[in-house]
Image 1 (tube, rainbow, N blue to C red):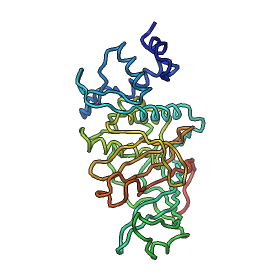
Image 2 (cartoon, helix red, strand yellow):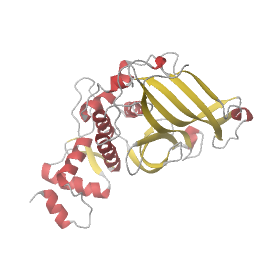
Image 3 (cartoon, helix red, strand yellow):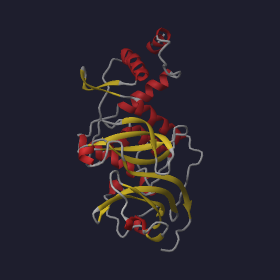
Image 4 (tube, rainbow, N blue to C red):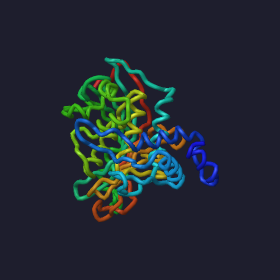
Length: 331
């Protein structure tokens, strides 16, 4: 009889997963990754004995926390595992996506989204809102794409009235070149051709998220934002998406948010990281049933730094649809 089975028999009041071996592998895979060979970014590791560790992980998962250490026997802190479970659900959903897209060279991926962003100028502040439809080449840079913007009614920035000039563009549309230039570093590209060549294994994807970063809170924050760059107006094959979500769960400082609303008003669950020195938390939102990616938002955590009340949503987006097109409209 395995340690996990004994635990289930003796702790019937604790909800241990039915597929014990699979859950053990999921937790260990999400929290333990190989040490990167190139950039020396070492993820936090779980150091426990095999039998005792399996039982401890199951009890901790039921309680909502896992003990993590940098060295054997050296406890650093206790971290929640809710975000690990959420991201694993997203990874599983990616692996079973029946609506998988298969774009080809020469085609375009078309993303429709609703956005909200802070604007400051003319002595005032407000939150601009719009619906974006962008055609991006399957291969190549963004300068070959087309962007259509439909301006919505603005919202007030917390504590500020909406200035009259902010409403002048509401209801208007524009269409033109998606970007005048695209000078992103190679490792920050997010076109489908590039993303489809990324590793399909979580440890190597984790290493990619930390490309040219090193380690520490600032590196963790940038890796978290790199994740967003691969989700927002970007699409990758299911294998890479699955690896991406598994890798993201091992970024130190990530937590789960029980309820988050995207820019389109859809309620989901989120994973988040507080960005050092910003007074803000960046969240990635998922559908609570299908675990499909919905969008992202930035929420105030420190009023003094962010100059807005705690809990204020300053930036948000909602990915409404993704499809493939043979061509883009005229600029």
